[in-house]
Amino acid sequence: SPRLHLKLKPKLEPKPKPEPEPKPKPGMWSFLSGGGPEDAKNGWVRCSELWGRADPKGADSNQAAYPDATQAELQGIYDAALAEKIEKVPTRRFGRSGIDMPLLSLGLGPFMHFNSIVHGRPMWGKVSGLGYIMFSLFGWPAVSAAVAYFSPVASARESAGVGVAVYIVGQLILMQLLNTEHQSNCDAVLRKSMDLKINHLETARMYMSSESVLCKALSHHRGEEYLLQTKLRTLDGAAAFREKLKVSLEVMGVDKVPLLTLHGLNKSDQVEKTWECLDELEKIKASGLCEAIGLSVHAPADDVLPFVESGRLDFVNLHFTFLGSYTVPSMRRVVEACRARDVGVFIISPLNQNGRVHKPSPRLAELTAPLHPAEFQLLWCMAQPGVHTVSFGPADPSQFDWQLNAVKLLPHAPKILPTIVRRLRRAVREELGDEWCDGFTRDVGDLCQANERAPGAVNVYMLSWLWSLWKSLGMDLFATEIHKNIKVVGNDWCCGGNTYKPRPFPELEPELRKVLADAPLGDDACDHLLELHEFMKGRTPPSKVRTPAPNPTLALAYP
Image: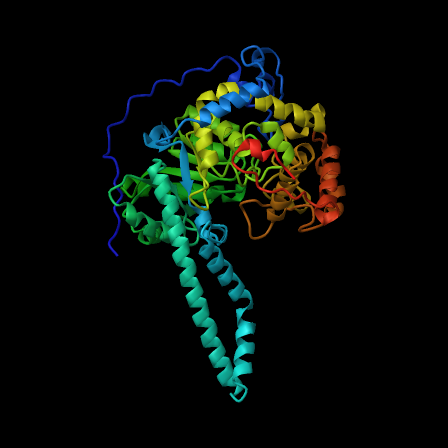
């Protein structure tokens, strides 16, 4: 098939230094960050923005400048904003790269999953997707039994041969139906995205069929301008990295990509190879195969900051949301370092991996009303200085509402966010107490991402975060799902020990208490993890939470 050629803007001379961002009222952003002079002076890092002080004093006090709005006032602002129409999503200058980056970026990771078909709107998509899965799991025994029944005189070898043939043909037919429906769905998602000028398309070599599906979808958009970004893993070294790029370009049918990314600096032991691949990435950029280079990270801030401070990166993909990050403690230091060095910031998965806010608990939905929790999380991310774009991965064309609503609400962020932020922080502190929010949740050190200092490499940060969200906001469904994802072996994206693997927490407890002996509220943390262990054993069943509708007034109508 003919290769696609990206329609890119011509290389421009370096742009003059942009005008500084207008300064908000005193105290606005330091308040929203949850920190303040005291935190900065002592070098504290809160593991989540949620644990910040609801009513900071002194320089952070903004009660007068941003008083609490009433629920009626918030509802009025919300209704008026959502009544507006969006023809296209606005753009921001993507740091030193000078690229005009849309405020929303289309993440193509979901396109690799059967989920995007099984849960798609077309009924045939559900039938073909489920049919393929069921046939793959149970088809062979059924085919074998049918062949044996209808050909009782055939030899065992003949029956087996016919059975294999029927099974293979059935697999091929169902796979073709599934691929057709899958591709059609992706084409529709991309069409809607491009119509809204959400033209930043982010994929990765490891996203299974994502690059090939994207290649076919883009064949319908020749002549349109889009920004393609792919990500390549660094674990095999620089030589393998260049070979992966060659394969990736071939699969996508392009000659170059505007944005090329080192995928997955996730643990401290990956730092050396990441530096090695960054050298290779700079050579690739010099050769003209990409225009901007970046790093996608899940690692602690101390491992990421040297890369940002080196001045060699054009952008960074990272997790940074109000509720926290499912990988490491708050990345605010990295965001601020990027802002100081004019490095672009791309927020990864603000809805799914960082709170499952598209499936919120009743308590969380109540506290963010009239905004849906997904709208609040997106709005908070977009409102942070230094953040340029926020990713989302719709499974079908109907799943754009929360993102577009957040864009409409962005001009009203100073009126909306302070009230909801204070409401959330007060609720959390009422449940967990100031001592816990100002103690252990403020500085969990480096006990995350499979740190070997912890017995069983238990991910103390992650488990404490999940316990806190469960107890304060009723987010037991999210806690259960993420707890299952924490693994020591075979997973460096959300890694470490959970409360029962590789060793049950009661066995680790005495050792962990010694490790946390000098930590603030270390004994309390161990008590909480023991409680989480009991919960995860199934003694306390997770709540049955349905997905609320995009309309937040409906989201509060829980059964």
